Image (cartoon, rainbow, N blue to C red; front, side, top):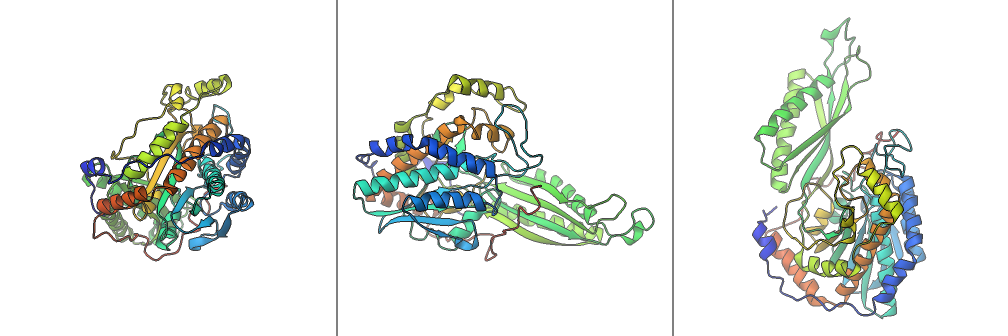
Length: 481
């Protein structure tokens, strides 16, 4: 991956002015307002399903049904992923795609109340708001389809349902298998605690499970006969923790021990640790990952065990497209934010008093942040891979109480209430407007493609660290009770 300087991201000439706003969009926006209650019901249903990556059968089926009923042709099971789908309406160019996610996270089950109250102990929950993500994208695609029909606009709308964003790299396999080859521009969004067009670069990452194999024995009567796979895991973890001092700033290494044995008086012959390595630059991620693998080799050698690695996921950093970002910023400013009812405000104020919460003024939800391009972000997303092959734009909408951290029970709680649904509709309307503006703007699409070419460089060729392996459909197996 070619390093990107901040100056390039900010100073790159766009080569085209903003397109004129699309005509006759008022009925499209009012139609979304009228359908808000229906889409809230859809989102709440997916919230209640709370299906983790590659297991989102009911969530995916529900969104597919919505799109089929609206006149889209739907193809399911794309790129070797049973819950992935492509819904399409129209024909010819341009091809404008809207992304939708719908996977939940393990261990974040939570009721719609402002204190910790799991609905199912240890169960999954939508701590990243993907129930809202998939629903808003579906709503935007349907509204845009109705606008295209009403105004006799030429081109193709695609709603692409993408599973397993949370660590499963669902979109990576779709990029690798050519799902985006003929797409001209991609529109996406993500739940958050403010209203803004995403100008940050996310972090690239590689993740995998290290499984160590030893010899079991009675831990008291015959420990000398055993070779502990857990010792290997713990030795590896010690080495990677020392490694943290000697890696570039901005890097991250995370791990959890997913299998540490079954009984303390039995030397574990099997143990597993799940690692994620992150940095903005993929070249640095690859270097750190190779050093983590070497730590596993050393741990196995020192403990008399063996090991193997299952690569689970790998994603590029998000590559912001300033040309498209300006189009989406104008759309978001037209839509604007929203205000809380007294009941929503009371819920938000109580939630802000919970543990590990950073309180931010609640009035944030009524505002739209100015456009800013080029800063380094801290999270990762498989939208990053899409953004390196197709001009891509993404916004955040205030579906959570200001100050909420993603992947928290607080995010699950707010995401299942009217607070989440209001922010969801801000996103749906903004994406629909952005799509309408792009359908009549070939010069803007050309400028967005030229910007992408300039940023990634003439020698760029997309390839993933996952190589030719199939999607790891079982990566969440055993993660939910």
